[in-house]
Image 1 (tube, rainbow, N blue to C red):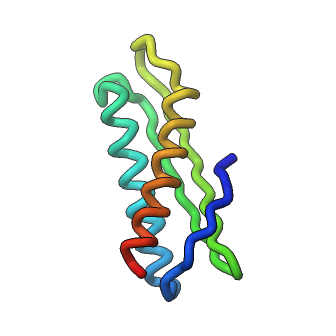
Image 2: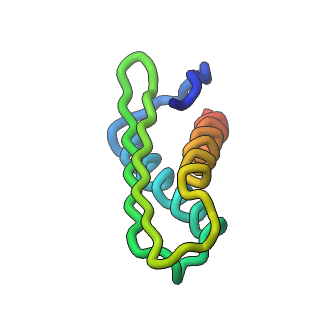
Length: 97
């Protein structure tokens, strides 16, 4: 579970939220491909969902499978990817203010 971070939010309309979700997915993909050899990946599905009511909620779903063992713990990598993208989103929102 990602920690709750209080950040003063910029004005966010549906288009901006959709764009941020797409950028979030790209950032997670980059992070994972920096950690795992691309040729070893059989499946890589990433979904980032941003929902805004009074707060902005980020949900990250990562499904990664490898064709062969590389000695890396996928659970650790996906957890780190989730933490990374949460920090990335916080920084991105601060830049938008």
